Image (cartoon, rainbow, N blue to C red; front, side):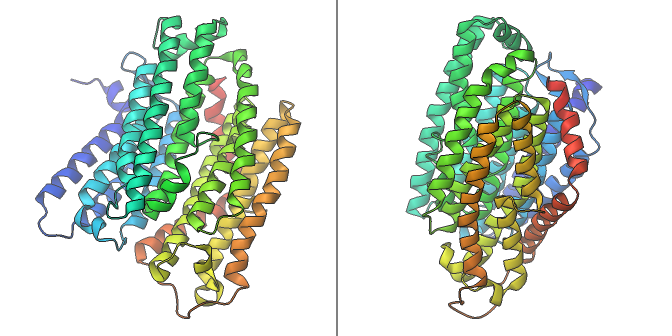
Length: 475
């Protein structure tokens, strides 16, 4: 029988496992071609788990110290559940036949990936960390090619799978060096071995860092992102663009900062260099894009670079500001993708030209998209402004002024292509008349994102303080 401490530590994971079984049983029991009711069950279950996460308190480490339910894990799990709820809401009204006929497969895969994220946030052991990463990643490869009648979806999924498999192999190879030198899979003992300056541990952690860079889609490990984002279904892409990235950053904090003490500063040059490449490449590659999903894909790569600026600070303040950035990014980026989905359902196109005259056709939807673009661009006073300001401040406090200057300059470049999209909506005339119609669930998902962007823009302090509280114990 499991002890009460284990149940407390694994409460959300056990609840999600029960939801998976419920979705599986419901899918088996359904007859007929339309199985969308499975989506409602999954969405309701995630909503319940989301409320439950606010009742969860830190618990003693379980499974021999491999699994920890601390403040960082709880913060991350709330973020994962919130992003998943928005993604599931948006997919409920998906018109593709595949979402009606194979709704059970879609939601089982997505919830399985979510389970991997929840475990990953609490993993304090190298083996559990790697297994959780694979549990999160493998369903994503399948979901990327879920619309298999589209040739481009199959191609994108294959590219995603191949690059992901190579990155997993590199990560496993690096972690094997770490185990060989530390003689333990416990991350606390790995940190002690790294602090002693063993070269084999450093080599292993560098190789593992390359694997992590793929998971968060940093340059030059971003090759899968544009094609996958363009070909896969937009509600899934909206979720893919934020939740796995957040999980990757939490894992980075666990491996490279937790228990590392002063040795955490050794990763500043690596992180700062990667941040520089990612910010420059992401923003420059976004400039010529005419497909809105590809534009958001490259802009997302740039945002990973901005988060790496906070990671490069190698401090409690840097980690906290990355956590705040991730929450702001969930609302801004998912909201932008969902507006693209709403327009695509009406226009049959995901190009930036499809947004022409949107302000005249659907002024509220255009206003929502403008808010999301302003947030992604870091304009006062929406959530993204504080997110960028705080990560720059964290980097400046450790002397990375050149990185802050570079980030600020490239933020202006990003504003150029975001405002080009705004120009399409507000200045160019529409190609056709008539409102852009949203399904009720998609409208609810967009409203949640608007509320998040506005609330965090007006009153960011509670979330900033919560992030600082959960980041402080890492150092």
